[in-house]
Every structure is written in C-alpha cells, then in structure tokens.
Image 1: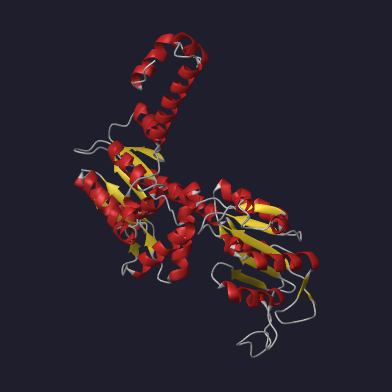
Image 2: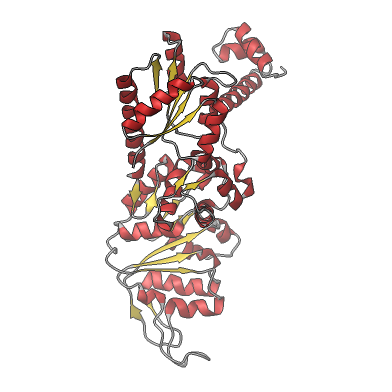
Length: 436
C-alpha cells in the first residue's frame, strides 16, 4: 500500500512537477495551492506526510504547521523554501519540522528525505504496537507500571483486588493476570456480583442441590467449582450482600465449598481475583463490607488509571478496536484522532470502544472523519488537552504566586528565591498580572 503525500505550494508548476516525480516513485500525491486548501484535504483524507513551502500568501508554512500540530497530532511535515538559509532551517527544526529542503528541490534529496521520514514514522508506530500483554494494549508509563506489577504478582497464589473507575478494563486486567499465572491452563470464570439478583447470587457462586428451594429441579454446579484449577474473577465485589460475604470468606479460608441445600464440603483449588469501582476500605468503615473479607481479598491490589490519565494509549486502543470490528482497513483521520485525544472520557475505555463501534457502523467510507466521531459524542470536539505553551504559562503563573506567597509579597526576596534578578522578576509579575 503506497504512502499518501500532501504537497503544498502556491507555485502551481512546481508542485505539478514534484507530483509527477513522486507518483513515478509509487507515492499517492495530493496537491494544494494554499494552506487553507491543504487543511481541507487533511480533513478529508488519510495523509502520511506533508511537504509544504515556507513562503505562501495568506497562510505561510509555519502557520500551516502550527495548525497541523494542533489538529493532526503526530503527522510529520517537511518544509521547502526558496529563501533557504541557516536561520530558517534552524527555526524550522526547532519548531518540529522533520526536515528542511532548499529550492531548487533536487529529486534525490527529496526522495531521500521522504523515505527517511516515513521509515522513522513507521518505526515509531511499530514500537508503539509492540506494547501488548495478554490482551492489555498500552504505551503509557502508567500502564507500563501496571503491567510490571502484574508480571511480578501473577505467578503467586495471592488474591488480588483490582481497583479503578468503571470502564477502565478490570476484567481484561484479570484475564491478563490469569494468562500470566500458574493457573493459565485452567478455566477463567467471571461473574459480576452487582448484575445478579441477591437471591440468585448464592446459587450462582456455590451451586445447589435438587430440591434446595422452589424451582431447584436438579443439582447445579456453582461458579466456584467451575473455576477449579483456574481463576475465579468476582467483579463489583462491593455489591455482594453481607450474608454471602461470610460464605465467600469461608471458601477463601478453607478452600472448600458447600452447595445450597448440601451437607458435604467439596475441595476447590482456585485463584480468586476481585474488582470494584467502589472504595472498599470506605465501605468497611461504613460497615457495608466485612473487614476480614476485605483483607483476605486485598492481599495485594492493583489500581487502574482512568483513560484521561493515559492519553498516550488512546490511538493504540482506538485502532485496535477498529481492527476488531472491520476487515476493510478503515483509517481514523488525524483530525478525528485529535478529537479522541482532546476528550476527557468519563466512561473510560468502554466509552472509547462504544464510540469506535458507532464510527465504524456509521461510516461507509474507509476514512473515519472527525464529524463521524463527533456524532457519537457531541462534546468530543471540545478541547480539554492543554497545549505545551498554555501549560508553561500556567506553571510560570502558579510558580510566581507561590514564591511571592512564601516571601510574604517581598519581591526582592522572591526574586532571590527564584534565582532571578529583581527587574526580570518584576517583568514576570507584570506579564502575569499578579498583584504583590
């Protein structure tokens, strides 16, 4: 599959010539004569690399690049300029351009720059795709720490409590622990304790004997027994009724189970994992959860971060969900991906999966556009991810206020503490409109 390049230059004859050369080298080429036209093409097409002129009317190369950085995160850009100079080249590279070419453009130099850029971009993406661990897809440092914790804990027999907000992937994490454990060859049995009516939960977990209650027309094997030799995952354990908590505690302590209406104990060898979006420690304090069961389940705990706290994982997860849903190689446009990155995801990974399912179902084209993503969640187009410049300004503002507060408004002392001369510190105070 050939890479798609976008050429941007107000010199019509030049981009036609360059397009012919690049198409002869098996690239798919789009052309634009203005920056605004280039932005429209980026919204409508999946582009692998942008090559733009520096000096253009209405919107120059730097302005175009700033827009691309904001709305098409990660898309590489090469700059061309007839006014090639060392200052321009240095400025371009500092801004984030991957390469700078002086006009007249030499074919070999252009092809080499394109080849290297695409190779490095592909290598970076392939590295990101390597981060999988028994069903967990990640590239963020937060999830890397979680996976390291799983790798250390999985071989033991210790019960593990998985905590995290709804939709953060607690069952997927439990499956990963199971697959990495010594129980991997056995069954993985999961039950959501909050989804089963309280009067049925005991029978589901421990089984029952024929005639134990009205409707018990035959013996039933419970999920604890079904998980023998493997892993039992108790999701939303905080919703389990207190009376059942006592019976579960006995199973964990004695490694035996007695069906409802039965008289004999049956031995079980099972690794118990549990999960809750509730604060179980607080539930213990409120006498809503047994303290002895809490400590039996929480021998060790794993906390899953929210999706908002791990935005680096969003592209990887989104593409993975899409690959699972379709065989026709749909592609998420850079602008659509930016929308996904900017959203705060209150429903976490489960919500992201639902949005991708909606996008695939509502797109007949191969390119998933930002409009399709926004149709799933209208608020998804609202920017919530803070830019670097804004983050720097906020840090500087808060830092100056803190230093002044520590020095009780004494500017000379504050400047000394901040290791700046007094005049510079006064300028910073004025810049951020801070009153002393």
